[in-house]
Image (tube, rainbow, N blue to C red; front, side):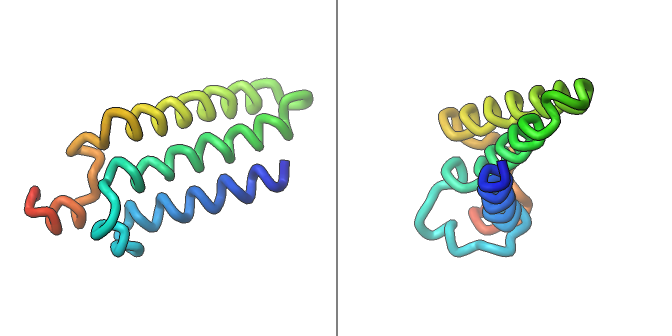
Length: 100
């Protein structure tokens, strides 16, 4: 579970830094639909790790984590397959692409 949580945190940092504009060099090589969804996968992986830790003790927390993990994973797949809609693109990205 610890390794899963660490992987989830790494995905959160990568996706969050892309969303916040701290890491912008990816815009030259990758489309937004490839980089921005990683934050949602990170949320799903961290929630799955917390679910694994709390599954036998705290039922409401475990069920909440399970729902967050499923929704985060579904969001990741949906954004990766269908692309990131305009309202989910960060302002700095839209401005750099001339789509503010």
